[in-house]
Image (cartoon, rainbow, N blue to C red):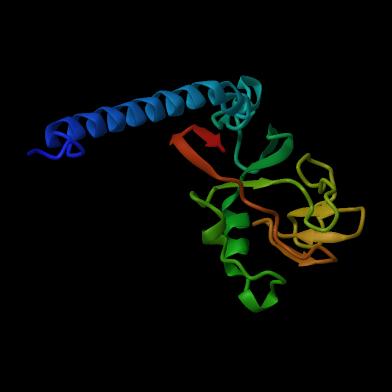
Length: 184
């Protein structure tokens, strides 16, 4: 006589397989649905097109003569672009590291010796140093001078005298060709 409580082993496997399939299918549909519902919120947190447009600035260097400086804006900050003279380069490279408040070789601050590109914001309290235009005071080291508190920068933008604790920062930039740079 056969035991009536014993079920067919094949029937049990089919029931478990069906249950596993339904569990996996339901979980997958739920995960995809959750991702699709969350995507608009995630996408909303990405920067807008106008912010992305400000993330980089291209500068045409061809009109800048030797010894001339221009100021461009990148991310709302002034960026000083200077085409240095041979004398300015020589002076910047000859400074002993022991004379600097924040020692940094001139070669580490430039990609090409004749082009100095740096953010024109004093590292003391955020003023904009003078020395970009002809006739403006350039300070004791013939670079830039912040008249608010008396910080003096040299021809490489390094702090030489005054309360500023750091050199003028160098933004990320690259030369796209001989006459164009991209800042940012």
